[in-house]
Image 1: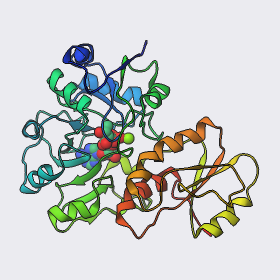
Image 2 (image 1 turned 45 degrees about the vertical axis):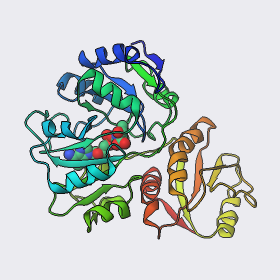
Image 3 (image 1 turned 180 degrees about the vertical axis):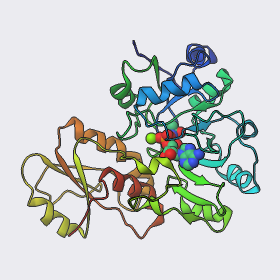
Image 4 (image 1 turned 90 degrees about the vertical axis):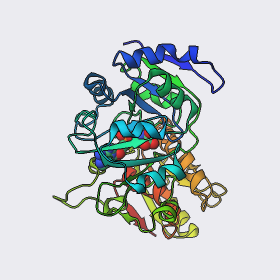
Length: 343
Ligand code: TXA
Ligand code: MG
């Protein structure tokens, strides 16, 4: 399949969206920018489109997709009830990087939800994503547009690298602002529970809802036989080819540790401004204490490790006592397969 890569800017008129909208109406899939990461979009009401999404990504069938809408009112088509908590959250954080899980309506096919009775809904803020939803007139099911298991794409070139020849079109809308996927919260459980941290932080959620539980799987590996709240938690994630380890400890000890691995294939990933005292090759990923900068750079840095042929990488661990770092910690722990080294 030929993959068309088209550039769109926020000032482009609706005529530039016609072809993408047509593809979506024909149950084809299109790579699209959102404010979090690039998504691989298809008509959420079309089992054929959904099948194509799973095939293009090589994604396990039981891992459900997020459905994207352009206005809050469109949620009523997708879910069977809209609790007060959902209205409050939408009021505060939509459009934006927050996904809510709610009981699904009959209109949503089970192939979208991986067979679950609930559906994940998000209203993105990215103007290109919103315009495409409006012009196509469809709710768009869209997982991150990476090959299953790889770090999520934050630039169109990442999508192209993973999905070239597997999808008919990728829209290049520039680099994603956030860099990590949306915060996922379930409102279908007894109490609101955070399933995947993102840049709508736990404290922001608490400021609207009061109490919010944090699912065990956010920071811990699954125990054998444990039931998951979100099927995505089961799978290996965000993994570059390089083997990642998170390293906990102060900077001096970090340097001493990594310097023992001066083999030409091992890299260090440190915070911006650091590097002095590191005797192996290193890259940076944003300033410590600035979760937005860290999350913005994280996946691009993980992908860069593959580009430079790194075999192994030791990553400076962000401050675990700060809940704002949950998203970056969660992604790094999964990229590392929960390998954490204390120095
Ligand atoms: O920012 C994002 O959320 C991006 C952009 C494209 O919008 N999308 C994204 O989709 O990250 P994906 O498919 O890569 O991750 C969706 C996550 C998965 O972990 C999945 O298991 C979970 O949401 N999920 C989806 N529907 C669910 C449901 N009904 N119940 C529990 N978890 C669900
Ligand atoms: Mg994903």
